[in-house]
Each structure stands twice: as C-alpha cells, then as structure tokens.
Length: 349
Ligand code: F6P
Ligand code: MN
Image 1 (cartoon, rainbow, N blue to C red):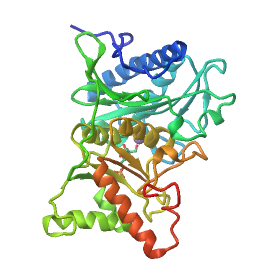
Image 2: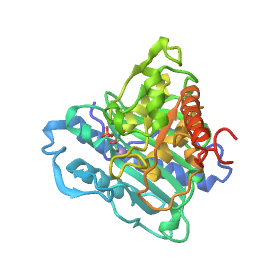
Image 3: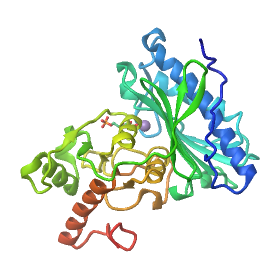
Image 4: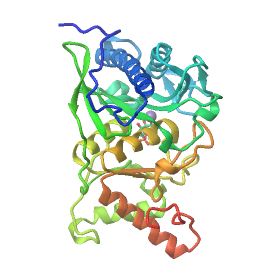
C-alpha cells in the first residue's frame, strides 16, 4: 500500500493535551501538531528516497543565521514546515534557517519555533535526522512570542527520520511516542508514558573536542574513561550519532546522558546547540519523561532567551549522571569561589 504524503492524520492518544482545560486551546495544539505531521511525512519521504533525490546534502552556498553551512535539505525542510504551518492556527514561525521571525498570520493564537532539519551533517550518510519543534501561545508581537523561558512552552517534540519515522511529543502531561505507519500514512501511538531510566552508564559527547571542553565536563569524562577502577566505580560506554534527535531518542529509550558543553573554540563558549529550537523542546520532552536537562548546572527550562539564535551548553538524560555532572560543576564553583552556577536557581539549592 502506498501512503499519501500530503495528508494523513495522527491518531492522538486520549491523554494527549488532557491537561488543557480549554477545549479551544487543545484543538489549536492538535491542529498545529497535525500540520507538523504532514510536513514530517513529506520530509521523511524525501529522506527515504535519499540519493534518488539529487543533491540533498549539497551545500547551498549560504549559511544560516548562526553561521552553519546550509544544505539543500535544510532549505527544503524549512519551506515544507512553513507551508504546513500556514494551514495551522499559527501567527509566528521562528526557524533555525531564518534570521528573523516569519509572520504567518498575526491574528492566529500560536507561535512555533523549529529546527526543520536537525543533524544536517548526516544527510548523505543514511543516518537518522529529524525535525524539532516548540509551541507557545503567541504574544502581541513576533519577537516577544519567543523571547521567554522554555517552561512557557505548551507543546514540544521532535520527529526522527530513521529506520522508522517517529514523533516524540509532550504537551505537559507526560511524553508519548508515535510511529508513522507506512501502510496507512497515519501516526499511531506506540508508547503512552515514556520513562527514562534513572541511571545509566552510557554517555554521548563529541569526544574530539576533549581538549576544548570546560573543566568540569573534562573531569567527568576522564572519570568515566577510568571505568571500574576510577572514582565513578563503573565501566562506561559511549554512543554519539551526531544528530541531536537520534541521540535524544536513544536516551529516552534506554537511558544515558548527552553533553554538548561550552568549549574554548571561537564561537563555542556557549556550546553548539540553540536554546529556542533545540535545547528547550528536547528539555521539555526529557523532563516530562522523568529525566533532567541542564546547561551543566542550571535547569534549561528556567533560562530566559535574549536572542533568537542564542546557544546554550546542553546536558540532559537520566537523572543520576546529569546530577553527577552538576556536582562536578559544583565542586569547581566551590573551588574557584567565583562561579555563579550555584546561586539560588541552581540544582542544589
Ligand atoms: O543541529 C546541530 C547538530 O547537528 C546536532 O544535531 C548534533 O548534536 C550536533 O550538531 C553535532 O555537532 P558536531 O558537529 O560538533 O558533532
Ligand atoms: Mn539542529
């Protein structure tokens, strides 16, 4: 059976967005997620055709607002997401691929931020990539709809284009996973209450940056590498896909910790990942599945956004290792006595 890639539905669980008392708001969220599902099906279809679609991984010659080289699939995905959101109750769209917020229809109630194609370095390699999104209620102007704390998200999630096309999503009442059924073209509920294992000895980090990392992260990873004989007393294993969505999906499935810390390379003081459309939505999904998401020490969802494409060091996953990394930052701040990491908003006060 061939599925229709321009329509199809998501069969929401009865629990999805049940925390919203307001029926109209629930309907708006569902309509927006349904539109994103249509976009995801189109992007997934293009990904599945891979080399049969010419030039997906080719550089466009341009760069996004953050300086990353744009690839053809980045731009196409952004166009597909924009077109889908035009059919939804969405006023404003903020994208990794656009310098400024795009106004779709200022009279509509919601605002959506997205990384339309996450993991672009894996496009030509037949490795999982995805689309990340974050939904807020719209404010009266475009920019202020996004310059706020991540705890104000009303729904967030990500699609993974891999062996299966999946959607991991939360509207604040737990995290669910849906799978695209290629036979029907519908997203069906696969896991109703995702729960991240509280402990794990698997970590994800781009180890080639070791010499550049901030000191607490370097100490933590060195202690992991020391294995059972080291201070952590256990043998650790490493997995790094290099697509945030795929690493996050693995951690949701079997636990672990992801780290993209700040480092001393030019432009990487605040890490690589963007707060608005990468860290915030992933953090919302992770917390709703019982995990923790920090910048190493402080909760991601409590951070205020000062500019659209702002970066943030990102550490998330199973409770125990994420707390352990925070304790390494704590030790450092006690030693230097100058760090503000553990002021009253810190994890440990
Ligand atoms: O979108 C940024 C991203 O591609 C993430 O998906 C991934 O986690 C990270 O960059 C990979 O960074 P690096 O190229 O340093 O391994
Ligand atoms: Mn990305």
